[in-house]
Image (tube, rainbow, N blue to C red; front, side):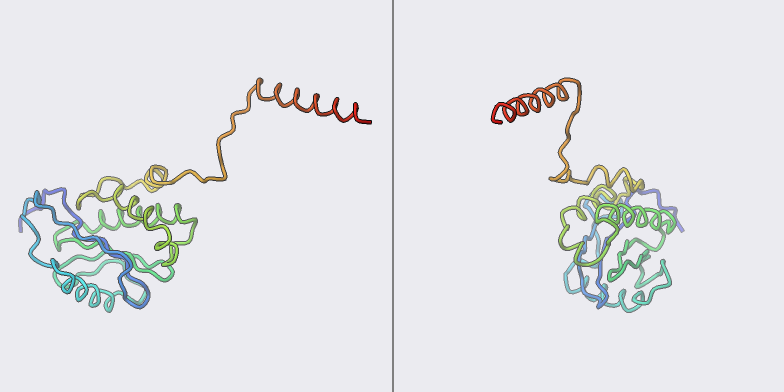
Length: 187
């Protein structure tokens, strides 16, 4: 068996819900891949059939890595979702499991500890950005959940940065002093 020296390790990222319906799926196999373009899972029909069978094998919590239909599937259950990385059978499952764990941790941070279907659909932009920060065209590029979450997170509109320095405090003091003088003058 030839050793795989390619960086391209992930063939697909899939999120299925508790009924086995697709929430999100992204299939990778760029033209620049050393083994050429993908020959399987090209059509939506093939992908849906693969996902249905995969869900049947993984719907019960307990496992985290299986070999299904000639593909290595690393998966994690999260409330009402199952998240998968699909790879070739010769890939390093520990590396895939680490990358998936990192992605799940980053998504959990970004979605405020609620990695569930509704949150994923409402924040699909963040989920896809997070995925792109973890996997680039099938290549695992980062496995640091905190770094990924910090690059992806958007600033909250209610928390604007306020710089407090001596000038700010003096301005506030002056404003309060003027208001107090106006009030005393009214009495």
